[in-house]
Length: 82
Image 1 (cartoon, rainbow, N blue to C red):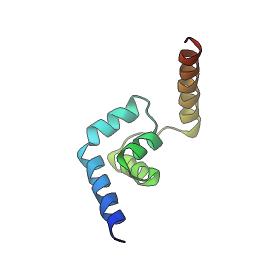
Image 2: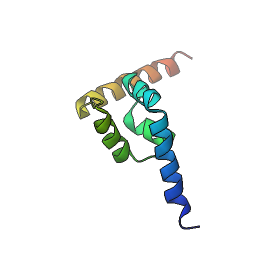
Image 3: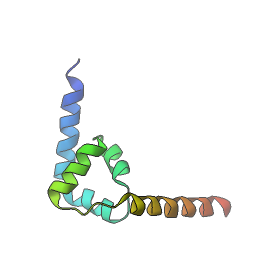
């Protein structure tokens, strides 16, 4: 079954294209590009290129890291309250 993976990847890309509005909304609501890519089974680089094609403004590395630290701090606080 050597051709199964490209077919699956193509299907995953089609799901992203079909869910364009949801994908963009998830990113706008501060979900990471990597997380969205994992959820759909596509490569980060492909999703990055898709966002560029769609005209979605990408976060800078500094913005992405700030969000990551913010979410990590919130996760730690909720764990410590238990």
